[in-house]
Each structure stands twice: as structure tokens, then as C-alpha cells.
Image (cartoon, rainbow, N blue to C red; front, side):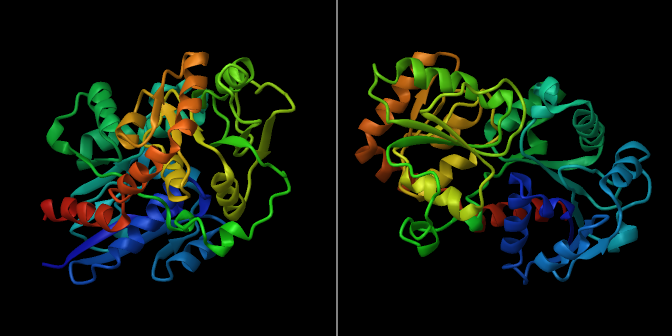
Length: 360
């Protein structure tokens, strides 16, 4: 039976991990036209044209996020059917939870606003708290991108296991290029780097970059680490990363430069103390680069036997883990290539479609 599914795609213009998830999920669901009739809703005061350029069939409205938050998360008025018509299932966004006559599904990527409210700011935290209160009350199924995230949901909100479905993400298509692709190998970096390890992600306290940098500086000689540590990502916030000639902070970079820098690295490091999934791991694997990651949160679940784990609170453990990942790259890279095959958008779409069908 073909089912009518509404999806809020408003977040796709922001170039975040949630944006990537939404774009790739919807495009993959469009490959099942015999099973699903998609109805896409997008709201943005100034960027509706961008939404339309990605999904021309979307219904877009010039409503700012603050209005939709107030209307749906606070007042919880005006059902989404007023925009999309009658549906069998509605899949809400990361930011708003509208009332709906149809069974509701949402995706939880991580719970950092709940677990690290001091890092997220009062406004962001209040938006997520308001939305989640309706998610808990009204969503029949909650898709979690990792078992770790599902465990966080259960612990924080005492949810039944039957309401949570674990559906892993995959590598966003914009990064899914082979190491020999021209857009990777043909990119010249202004950084002129030759011997380095890399971390990818905007600076936030939970990314643990200060401890990573100190680990690199304090144990570089003992563990014979590469010449430089490169941190790629927007400015973010939190304590200042130590300034040193061997630590390079690039700031935000376009996709092709990120790919080129990852491809040239000796190893990729994820030093976070919390991640809902950990997409940079998949990015490194696709470029044939070994990974060393924290042994907490979702990261061991994602990396399996295809990376080195370390204690992110221990500087020497971080340095040792990085060193080991480089030494064992001939074993880790084949394992990573095999494990990468477990994460595909086709599989994500199939499992998500099954969630929708279970509600009809």
C-alpha cells in the first residue's frame, strides 16, 4: 500500500549534519515511489528559494523559525495538515513539533542540549526542551541514529524501548567521493601540509579540542606523532585551543578542501566526550584514513573493530591511541572499508520506510 508521508525539511539550508541527514534521507526515500508519496514542508523567511532549489516539489512558506517555534512548540496550534493536507504519517524536524492528526515520527540525532545545556545557550536549549516535551507526548515512533542516543533518550525520559528505533546515518553524498576523485586529488590547499593528523568539527567544549591539543604538544615526542595537528571547522565557542606552530586551525572550509585535507592526513581523531553518531569517522574511512576515537558515547558503536579507542579524559591515552592508529593503518583501513559498507542511505531509507509502514 502506498502511504502519504509528510516531512518537515526546513532545516536543509543550514549546512549542518541534520541538514545532510534530511537531504540524503528524502532523496533516498524518493527512490521508493511505489511505496511512498512524499509531501515536503519547508519554512524560511528568506531562504525558501534555496529549499525549492533542492526539492522543487516542496511546499514552502515565508515563516521565520522563531514564529514556527512559538506556534508549534509553545502554543502547539495549527496542525501541519493545514499546509500539507491529509497524511498517513508525519516526520517532524529537529527544531519544531507541530500538532498532527497523523501518527508522528521524529529523529533524534543527539541530546547535547539536554546533556550539555551550559554549552548550547539558553535559547537553543529552551527550543529543544519545548519540542521534546511534545515529542514525548505525541510521537509514536522516535528514530535514534545510534544505540547510544536511544539509551540517552530512555535514561532522560524513561521511554519504552518499543517507541525507539535505531536507524544509523550514512556518509552524506556530498562527501561520498573516492580518494582518487578529481575534486579531492585536484584540490590544492593553501596550508601546505605534509605530515599531520586531523580533527573535523566546529569548536565546542564537548569536542575536547583543548585536551587533544595539549595531548599532542605534551606527548608528541614520546609517541612520535606527526608534525602537525590540523583542526578543521567553524569558530564555535569554548576555551581557546593552545596557539603553537604545530597546531593549525583552518576555520570553516568548503567541502572539497575538507576532503583533500582528510585524504592527506596520517589519521583522523575524534576526541569528543559526547557524539550522537560521529560522521567524521565515515568521512575518514571513505578516504582511506585510519581513525582514533574516544571510547565513550556512540563512538565505539560506530567504529567497531575498525579504529583505535582511547580515554578522552587522559592526555597520554589520546596520544597513544593516535600513534597506534597510524602504526596499524594496514590493518585498520581494510577493516574500515568493510565496515563502511554497513552505513548506506539506501538502508537508512528502507528502515525509515519500515517505521512509517508500521504506523499505517
